[in-house]
Each structure stands twice: as structure tokens, then as C-alpha cells.
Length: 162
Image (tube, rainbow, N blue to C red; front, side):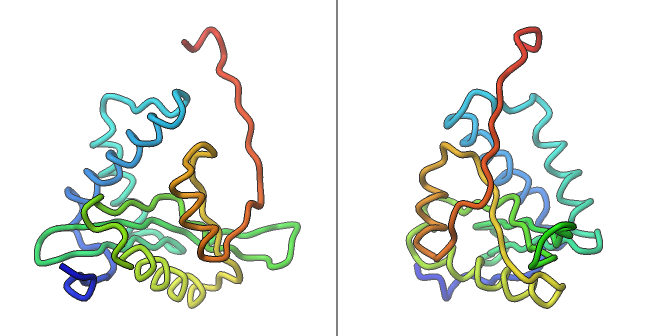
């Protein structure tokens, strides 16, 4: 199998159930990197709602990579205003997951390239990606493609919330 067998396009309603499964897989992987990313019990329902809301919202983009009816990967992003800075609009990739058996075949590059092009057409002047700080896989992926760290977010869990 090569990536030419995959089609990258905007998500359709019939893709959302499988795309939600991929989002949940990604969120569970995040939980393996850091316990502050523990996944809630109703993650699949929340992922479906999130995908439906994002897919139809202005300034949002939901791409899927498919082969026939199977969803191989999903990328969720949005264009956001940077009120105090230039460039003033960023295309923010908030969720990006490809099935393990489809990694290392340039599919990630292809989805990222299409997302970047579409986000720029939507007004983005820069592309950013957000992911857990301890996710070295994502960090390596983006650094190899010319991205660099831009913001640090630090957290502490409230003892009462445990």
C-alpha cells in the first residue's frame, strides 16, 4: 500500500464515526504521555459532537484521509486571530492522527500540506500545531517539517480534582 491509494478530502457525515474513533485513539495516546490527559468515559460521543461542530463551523477545517470507505487519518484545525501579534491569523492544527499502519508513508506530509494550503486560503498567515508537550513523536514530526516551539503551557493538577 502506498499513499497514492489514499484520498485526502474534507470530512463528510459518513466519515465522522470512524474519524471520532481516531480522535479518541489520539486522546488515549495523549493520556499515555501524561496523566493530565486522562480520557473521559464518554469520549466517543464528545468526539462526534466536536467533529460535527467543527465540520460545519466557519473558520474550521476537518480533513480525512480515506481508502475506499475506511478513514485512515483525521486532521482538525481552525483559523484563529492573534490579537496582539503579526502575523495576525494562525491556522491552528488541534488534532491530527493517522492509523499506525499508514504512518511513515508520506500520508502525514500529504495531509499536513493540504491542510496548510486550505488554511492559508482561509486567511491563515502561519500554521501552528498543538499537542501534548511530552509527545515526542509529534514534536519530531513537526520539527522535521520546519516547525519550532512557540508557546509553553505549564499545569498542576488541583489535589481536590483527583
